[in-house]
Image 1 (cartoon, rainbow, N blue to C red):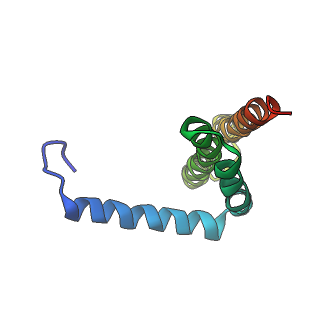
Image 2 (image 1 turned 90 degrees about the vertical axis):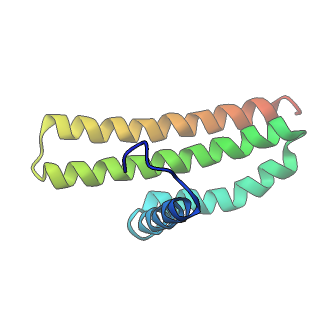
Amino acid sequence: MPSNVPRGPREIGKAFVWSMKGLRAGWRNEASFRLEVCLCVILLPLGVWLGQGAAEKALLGGSLLLVLALELLNSALEAVVDHVCPDIHPFAERAKDLGSAAVFVGMLAVLLTWGLILGARW
């Protein structure tokens, strides 16, 4: 869609539908995403409960949501790489490894965030 086209409720509605399709595809096709969603279902309310103030709650919950977003991006990258380059190629392998590393760094950010915020209390 060109950038000069006005965006209104209809376009926002379409974007929402496409986003829901992406979440469904992630849930149906990606075991890692399902596991991370299950962890979020447990940890997100815990983070909201344990966080003292809006900033802590946002950091505890936001770090979890960041991992979900990274996992979806990694899955999208892997799908494109597998489509474009079905054979094993060093660049394809590197792209997939980098996507996986991004998810790993996001998980480290969760550990660091939760550890610093909750660890300071004990």
